[in-house]
Length: 552
Image (cartoon, rainbow, N blue to C red; front, side, top):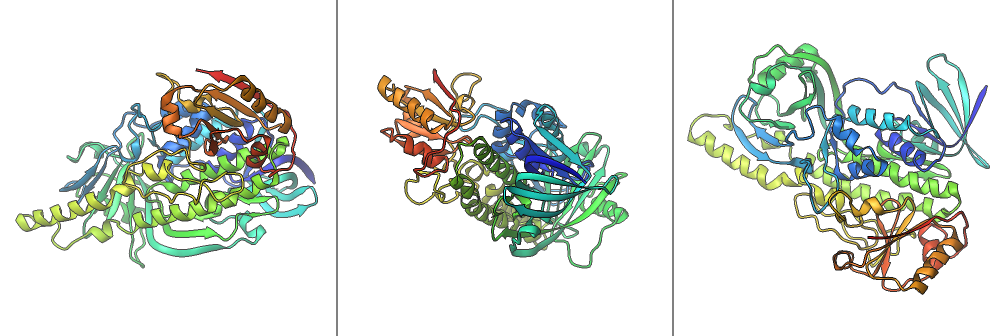
């Protein structure tokens, strides 16, 4: 039997596994990524790449490549329009949903992007080809996992020829989706509610549909009518659209012919619709009771499932991959301690619970709940009812489409590797105003340094210490010595500018590799701080140090 070895084995080559592999590979770590499917096709899956995900792509140097892959161009307006039917009356409109407009903004360095998930996966897979330490094997199925003294032994079957082989790894990560085989192997259980609603994903081709209505370009049209409340919108080039009937009654089954008939009826537009696929899916809310056993971890849908409204599932999964990537990399390099790996579940799971609540709240007001008898009637009574429903939509749905407080405003704070200033801040609700915070655990506030560079662009691959005042030479020397003593990579940014001090609220701010604040204060406390945020407590862990000092 063939036996392979790799420091990290990643099971699942969707966005989560790809993100983890890129995070590891960009740091020079070897990893093997296996996937039982070929990851091709045009199933819509997710379509919203959030700001935070594109910030990671910027750090990897491929945000511009995702922008180039936009099917309708990066300037296509990300409007969300509520209508009774595509051919009939409008109810409400949200402009620049999810902050996709490619304009300079003082709150973030990368806009969001409306793009099919399979296009994002293509960009991520292409990036993997530039990372020689990453190996990818498709059509390979995980059979079993055994934890051994120095790591993990995994049995894998090659589905192209039926042969089995062994993979020896220091760590294993299950990014293998909602039916995770890895989750089963570690005995983790999903807790929550199955079957919040029954829905369909239908992909179809409809030449001329974009110009067959009067509501203008949008990424989604929510149809509220008696035939079938649904979402519909353009998905890709060649006139490909998606159609999503929501809360479909039990007993209703849609084959290709029935799906085409339903599109024609719900839109009120008679065109020769070509249905390419019609797949049933069920909205649920689940979270695993644990994310880890020993050297085996779970990420993405393998440990948390969200209703898709708000687009949090894929994006939170990619963030899981980033979090695990830098922490596993730190341990493999020798400067990351055991508390760093323990922090993964401690930090991510409470956040996932809060985001699931947000996604469930969005799911609680679909077109099915908005429908009113008489909504499509002509005359004053129908118009009055449409105004009433439109006002409700405008009042209740901004939290789903203007979600910046959720996307950027989450604050970690329950782990031992963050020096917290009191209890963690609760997750803000969508629809409000995003207020950046440099409190430990929160995402470091974004600042434009000049016309093209963001402060994030100056951060190092390890920890970054921001000084908002001039550091005396003896203090700077001590900090460098502490980094050298502990072997923890540290980049020092001296930013003697009042705008940084006002935004970050302290003279010294220590930022993690994932751009979250680990500590802030007025006085450098010494090497013990670096040991703590790297997962060692007060113990000593040594590895080669990296230190670069920048002055702007």
